[in-house]
Image (tube, rainbow, N blue to C red; front, top):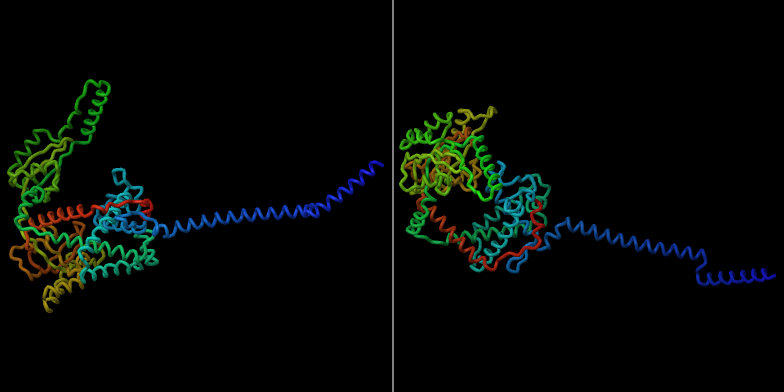
Amino acid sequence: MARGVNKTMSASKDKKLRKQQIAEGTDKRTAAQAAEKAKQRRSAITYTLVGIVLVVFFAFIFIYNSSWPSRHMTAVTVDGTDYSVAQANFYYSNSYMNFYNNYATYINYGMFFDPNESLADQDYGDGMSWRDFFRDSAVQDIAQVQMLCDEAEAAGFTLSEEQQALFDQQYEALTSNWSSLNYESLQQYINLNYGKGVDADMLHEELYRTFLASAYADSVRSGFEYTTAELDDHYAEEADQMDEITYAVYTVSAPADEAETAEDTAGAEAADDAAEPEETSEPAPAEPALDQDAIDAFLEAVDGTDEDAFADYIAENFDGAAVAPVTLAGSSLSANYSEFLLDAGRKAGDADAITAEDGTVYLVMFLDRDANDYKLPGFRHILVNAQDTDGDGVYSEEEIQAAADEAQAILDEWKAGDATEDSFAALANERSEDSGSNTSGGLYENVPKGQMVPPIDEWIYASARKAGDTTVVTYDGQNEGSYTGAHVVYFTGLSDLTYARTIADSEMRTEAFDAFIEEHMEGYEPVTAHMGMVGKHH
């Protein structure tokens, strides 16, 4: 009975509980549904959070790979003006291009850096990579261009019509050749050559500013005035550096095994010194490559003679070695024998044997010293390259003569027309194959001795030469690894200043301009920020 009462009470309780659960929505089915809904809500929140994270991540990747950071992040600040990473990329690239264009020959021979590898991985020296070097150059250029542009504005300086036309021409040439260089678009050309963030508008603006700064710098430099007396005094003070020295030299190096023996001996002595610190001694000097008897024999045979005797002696005593005279400015002479060559009492034929610390012996003969007291010629020319018509890789006499005949025909054509310097210049722009002058009328001015190929050099320096003279000369440069062809040449005349005064004038202007830059750069000290983002395209 009791169990029945209890059972009834349990059933009643259970029923009441179910009613309560139904009322409260917590019966099993509803509870399960509620749990599922809660799970869905949690999943939705999770998916939303993941979605937000992914959106932020991909937005970051998109922004990072876009030009936005380069255009909006500051790389350099100069006198309160911020320059973006993109603008710094322009100056970095400009510095790189200028360096490459100036030293392309050396770079192609493996000097400085490899343009096909990352500059960040190539050592410049002083703990810097080549990328660091060009970054530093960019920072300095930004500051200097701003200073010069500010000074130009303050001085009321603007580009002349000719300068503006030249800038427009250069910009048009720069931005119109991208398709011929196999770029897909102008923007691709700009990005690959000037870095991320640079577009056509920025390129035009920064090119214009650098052009304006350069034009103003030229006007400042040309504004300095010097008397001939000041030029002569300056040259006299620096004559040892400026005079042209002609000499012959043959270098006798110590045999490798002797050098190694000397190194080993020095190393052994160093080890002894380390073992016995109280005893110190200098390493033994290297053995000279020539003994005193050989040096005496050289001086007896050569000193006071001439370059032919010097060359004959070298050939006879050093296995047929050949030597030829060399002409260099005093500032470019080797320190090993510059003191001998620059001695004020030196005369042609003086010879000496100079032994360096490493045992190398320099056999030297002084031939001439030129004080550059001559006026500089100028000329226009039209180059006609010889054609290898038979494809044998060699220019024959007939092929060189064909170039000379074409050059003569051009000269005859000019003579049959106005036969003026202006008409010759127009013909040079039209017909010359010299890319270095066929946009400037074939003009070369203020040409020092020995700067042109021998046939032209000899003709323009002939004593009877006068303005308006013309000729045709040929040059075979096959043995020198140079071009072969013919030139139509027009002599324009001589400079007003001698070469010596021209050198002095150039040096004095450079010194004065450097002082101008130093004075006016005060207050334009650059402050860098995100320069680590600059130059990554190289």
